Length: 213
Image (cartoon, rainbow, N blue to C red):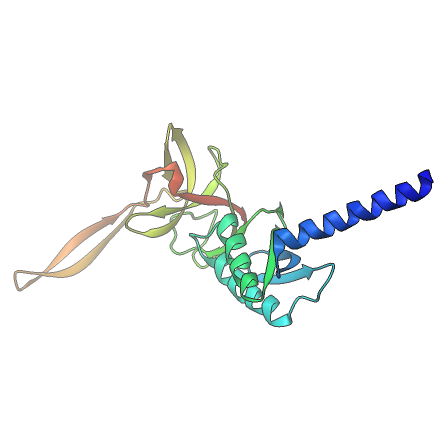
């Protein structure tokens, strides 16, 4: 008798769990999505669902959007997860999203290319790098940051003072050259002095730390 009672209770609990699932998700299917973003250039999407197959079109749309997001300097782990969830909803799916990379789970990489010679000899013009998007950086790290005039810059963290960070160039050479310019209709040879950019910026402008170069 006790054995039968236990079976009945177990069945009732199973019915309750299944009923709760339908209540929570309605007509939506449920899946787990993993965005593999190694180096930020080789993005793939894997999916897992207990009950139904995830449509290939949904995975392909996610892959295309994820690649765009990873390459976007303004994206974040949260924005990628939201984008994947929005795509899933169009296919009547509710998803949980994890991002993986060579840096670990939910560690977001961003590919970039060095422009200019301000970080010579450490980084050369045209060199490909991979940035780990993070707000956890320290003095001595090479970082990529938003600059109000030059858009994205790559520099070394030299000082951190409260909410400000001082970014400097590894290249300390001063470039002095002559240029011909027209001033008031008259051609003149002028001396132009160019020094590598060193600048204070808000810490929030730092996108992440250069990990691969």
